[in-house]
Image (cartoon, rainbow, N blue to C red; front, side, top):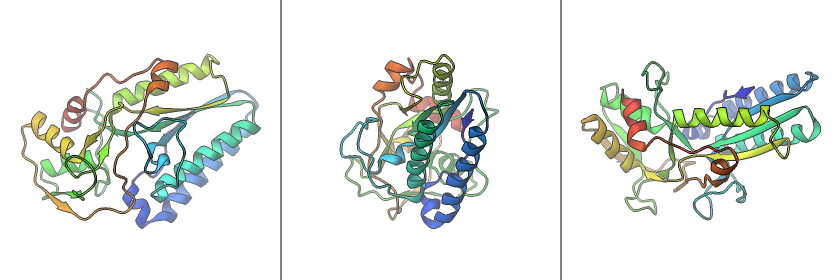
Length: 255
């Protein structure tokens, strides 16, 4: 079983926290209660997030790094969800789980038939870029340009969604083959490289040959300055690593 379902926007979670606590926590609890009623082995993969780390003390972020207070209700729900899953695994020998801490998935399937086109106003950078470029929005707002980074904008680890999907396949194979040492484990899923908001915009302008209209706005509550993964554990244990570049991910999103 792979559990992808959740509300997932940091900014929205700050504005509407109860939506996030109700949807992300209660639905997971209901699902695990049903799993507890199944008297056979269950392999369970959970979509977590790098937001569980808060603003990390050092980079790149390792799985064993201290989990600090989350900077947003969304991040807090992922922290609590992880705790719920681990506690349930400890109490139910039939449940084997892998928690994947996504960094920033972007891009689309190479067929261009499956991609990211959110209903309503996008809450994430890349779909806002593409929707601005096609004229759905007049301009893109960059939330702050005075962070302690080289160009003043936030840095994230952007991973192509196809690479992310392959990490799930590797994880499921590990669970099915009973290779987990414990009946739960946690892996960072990212590229190991950080890119700033401006670098993502520059990548888009390069691969699309489009000039993007953007402005600088105020910082957004809940955003952290920098986050990118140490992927050594996933590379070694899952035998997984990213293969696709930022430019390839941005181009697939545009296509």
